[in-house]
Image (cartoon, rainbow, N blue to C red; front, top):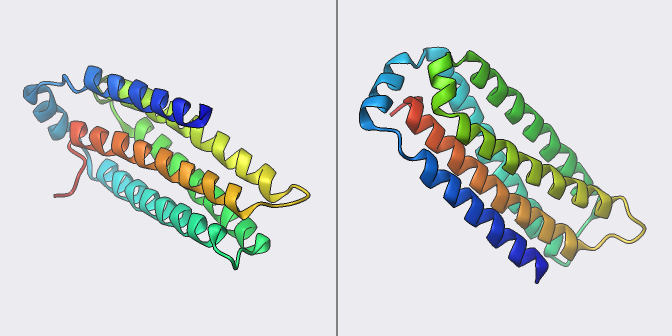
Length: 173
């Protein structure tokens, strides 16, 4: 019950922040698009690819953990791989942010803060999954629940990132 309430609060807070930031005017977006560099577009593309892989991995992990053939060692391997992908994703996002000029950074500051908050929630989920996987008795059901929750958080992160890409004109249409 508390988990559902927390997820609802997180979503409501994220949606409120989205509405606040979605007020960039068309003129502002057009100006920011002309400032986007090929390097920034490449970093954006790399990061979105990693996000897709993370979501696929969490979905796969959730499905295999809830099945009757749950294998703890395989789940640990998937968890380690997931952590590595997330680390890579965050490094690329940080590099992208650092490559933005002052005007671009100011335009997406709220989105970056939203992503930082979501990233913290993802890390909390991964820590809980790590504790479960390294406990005395490992529950596939709990691992599956943590993986599903991580996937939901990753989806929210990805939505923020895509909106940031729209704001900055980083998408390769």
